[in-house]
Image (cartoon, rainbow, N blue to C red; front, side, top):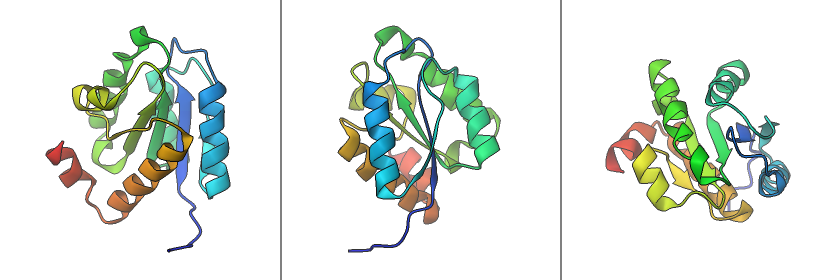
Length: 143
């Protein structure tokens, strides 16, 4: 098994309208323990702040926690903002929380759904590998 040091940054937060942090905090701890550099934006984070953080931190992964159904449509704002900045094919997006599922990914053009912290690590590693191999665009075209 490849034990190389992971140094990729992950931007993470609970999307605007979501004020629950327990699940997100567990994911932050798990990603950090795995070797990722995690920038935790906290709760009630606007779509614009996610994109600003990606640019500022030069990160390649966004993790978005959604615990309230009414916040899910804001995923489209995140994706569209990344597209406008021509970053969508350079940034992987993983979502988790009780308000999302694999279906959410298809509907909102999100790359991965993580059902728990362990699954999030697996999905983030997969997205990092796709980005390193410059295959995220092909992956987007296949979903």
